[in-house]
Length: 320
Image (cartoon, rainbow, N blue to C red):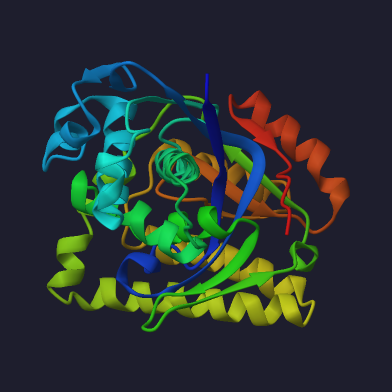
């Protein structure tokens, strides 16, 4: 039986996020410790996750994705955007298929778990139907799947870095530009997360988006400051100025916390890291943090402190 599997990796926002939602800039990386995989198999009847349907055309119908539960909604949204992009897929002889996913990315902790499922689904579908998708198109389709099909408030950063993979500087001002960077520029990093699922990222951003649209000075200034920090962080790394880079990581958390709500357990993760000598900020919308160490020797004691407090922690595996 024919089968295709594709993968996308967890991501951490290092500087700039969530200014990407508002046309800003960001530094982010994918890491291979966690991933989502999507598998397609030939089948007599089309199924999307646990949802069975009569045809792929039914999955691609307007509003279908928003009516199905959980991960099936993400898969259906990916199908809808791919079939809009390449309509011939709907009449393809291979359109009778089963599509499902698996993921070990911790849920709702701001590590890009939902976007990883969509990116992996689009990769698998493109492979199945013989469609060439460059990384930028893949990212655009993934973003549209979540924002337009499912109504989620989200920015392009997650999808761009997961589509390109590695360590990237991303400028979302028209015409947009993405630069792959050498991970060896980075100081020693760690990622810590709360094993208890947090709040959906879309809900977090929904509370701030209307304030941005009204032009509230506090929100506009915060977004501009976060975007500028992504550029300054890149320059600091190129100059091997780790002190400056670490200061920006800490400052970015304070700027974000001045506008976006920070849960007590998220703030506790930041505090634990800073007590251990690290510069720390949220990876995404909440539930996980990324920290920059002064040197490798700090990690063992810091990891022990996180685990004692009930959090999980690792050194991320970043590949160019």
